[in-house]
Image 1 (cartoon, rainbow, N blue to C red):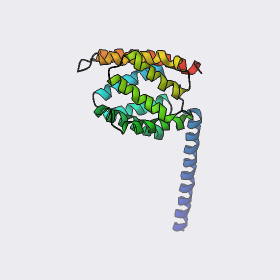
Image 2: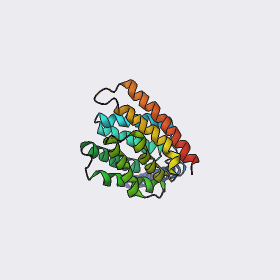
Image 3: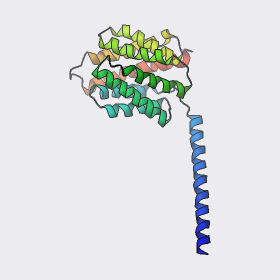
Image 4: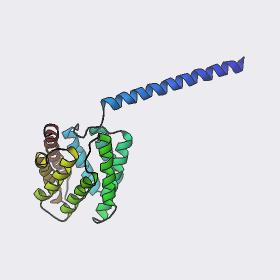
Length: 220
C-alpha cells in the first residue's frame, strides 16, 4: 500500500515536472517570437552610455567588465539570446585584448570573424563576414596609426553599411560623430580623462547612435 502511494506520488511529480518544462518551453518560444534579434532596435541613449562605458573598461583594462557590457549590448539592445550574446561578447573582448597588446596579433581577425558570424546567423542578415571583420580591424589600425578621424570614419561607415545592408553615405554622418568622440578621448589620453570627459563622450555617442538609428531604419 505504501509502495503504491509512493509510486503514485512519483508519477504526479513527473507529470508536474513535464508540464512545467513544457510551460517554460512555450514561454521561451513566445519570448523568442516577440523579441527576435534586431540590430536596428537599439535605444540610442543606452547605446551611447554603454559604448562609453565599454571604452572606459578597455582603456582601464577591465576585461571581464568589458565582456559583460558587450553582452548587455547584444542581449538588451540587439535582443540576442543569452547564448549568442555571451559568445559574441567573448569574441569581441578577446579581439580587443589581443589588439591592445599587439596591433598585428594574428588572433584578432579570426575572433572578429567569429563575432560577425554570430551576428549574421542570429539576425538572419546575410553579409560578407570576412569583409566586415577586416574593415573593423582596419579602422582600429587606422586610428592607432594616427589617421585623421574623418578618414577612418569612412572605414567605420563601410563596415557599418555592410552589416546593416544600407548605402555607405547613409551611415557616414554617424560614423564621423563616433570617430570625433574617439578623437576627443585620444586628445585626453595618458591619464587626463575625467568623469566629466567620459560623460561628454557618452553624450557624443548618443548623438552618433541617434543618427545611425535614423539611417538604418529609414535608409534601406
